[in-house]
Length: 215
Image (tube, rainbow, N blue to C red; front, top):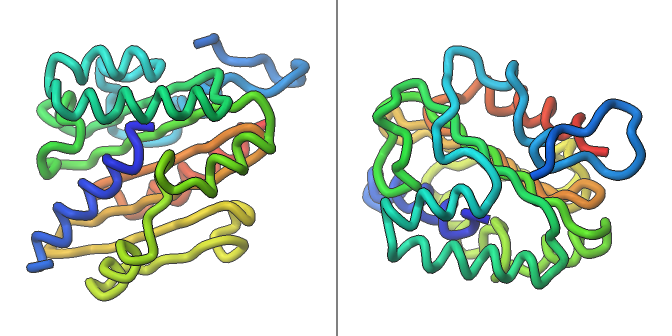
């Protein structure tokens, strides 16, 4: 996903600050939900608007290629790896309070509230679970990165402690007035991530809504 690179970049910004598709599935329809129906909900984040780079992974990459060609190459490799691991649908939504934060692709500290939602659907649950455990291909933060963030004051929960299932990680940290919330989990054939800046209250609530849409 615009993935591990994005989260690590976001965390690095905060550590530095402290010195350190298919359309929506109909309810009750057969088969898994679409990535779009999982990722995108009109009530997930209030007072924020969707950025134009939102869409399938390919749509997001096309926008990123123009804005940041170097990062685009990294993200394209990530998407190619995800597809090789069984990903068959994707949707990325970027919500912002200030339109100037659109099109940043984690290259700058947000000026206001920003939320990123990533939903990647795999061909089956076992493929999604296997990919979650392969840190080189997903959002999963390494032990050393988690240790750094904990040392900087982060709260980190994994597994059942997150209420998102065995394959899950939830992290929150507030440094010099900038808050970061990250939830990354696997549920059924989906890997989902929610990353918010300066939105400490709606991030967890949105995460629950998004997880509830997985089927």
